[in-house]
Length: 44
Image 1 (cartoon, rainbow, N blue to C red):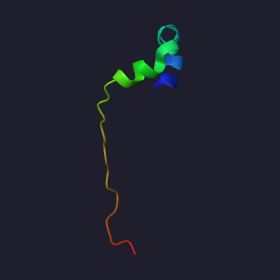
Image 2 (cartoon, one colour):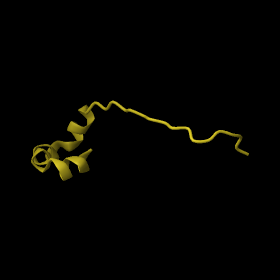
Image 3 (spheres, rainbow, N blue to C red):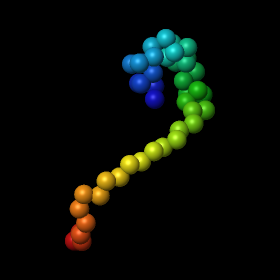
């Protein structure tokens, strides 16, 4: 998260970097997973 802010939103990062640990704890993530099954079978 921090690296993305640094790369794409450097001015916003400057505001948050001093207290990044406390800000990071408050971030709400909404994971999204996409799966494509390309083959089935038995694994030994």
